[in-house]
Length: 384
Image 1 (cartoon, rainbow, N blue to C red):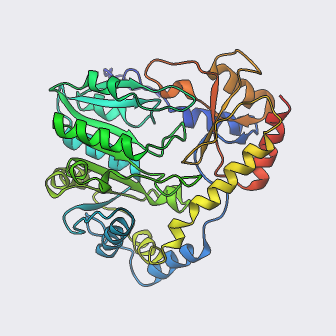
Image 2 (cartoon, rainbow, N blue to C red):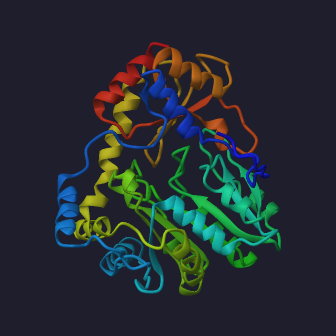
Image 3 (tube, helix red, strand yellow):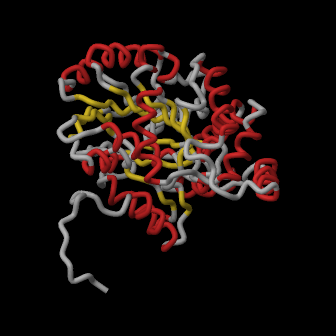
């Protein structure tokens, strides 16, 4: 069926996301899906039992728009313990329907026509569409492998009086890079000097490896005053289908955020919120997941050590980039398609995360999978 009414698209450059495309291709060709970032192992039964408990206890109606008070209080406690940052649970914390909704809502609340928003590419694909929908202007700062480090002189060159927002993401998707303390201090100076706001996507905050540390925007006092910090329980507790996240921000920024939030989702699934609040009472449940994911990263890389792929071990997130230049000079999209259709392993080409594709012969693989899945995928990759 086709509507007889013609409309002009508000997102002419946007199609189906690469994650949906590659996951469908994996399904169609019965390939091992290391493309989309969702775990294939079981959730902690304790967490599932907590959801059931709260359902049976009657927590099945609307939660407060801002989020269940007990969960907001747990988030405030966790943030202060980890980063020394104090947020008022009533006025400065909102529970969201996943991190993507938090990001969309924050951009919609803050970006006006002709405002400029700085984005570091390669970047996750949910940042640009809401900027365009709100008539803002994306401004790109390009990062390149293998380390994907920020050149702060490049950033200074693109900051103008129109810069409203700087979007950052550490630990970084797709590269697995992690910003260090000096990066955050440079960002803090830029934000103070330019009066720009910062949207800090920290959904992989607990997944950092090799003794590195996650430096949250909330940890730096002057930066925190200018930042909205996004977290994800879906990522942390491998329940991505629950779509449960949160955002931290100073009261005046959160007031604007909630004006929009209440009309996008109003509130988030109540029993899941109460279950997460209870689950957070044991800090090891989030503090220890880095070790589990580092073991999976190391397992994947160890299986590939004699392959023709080249890898710089990811410092964070649950994604590993592999360079295939010793195998093929084919473009990243074409090689990812070939790998899926002919060899049975699905990945994501890194070039699609750029505004203007940059070919570096790199593919992104998700290692948030069972050891059996990783071993099977690596065996195929090793044969190339």
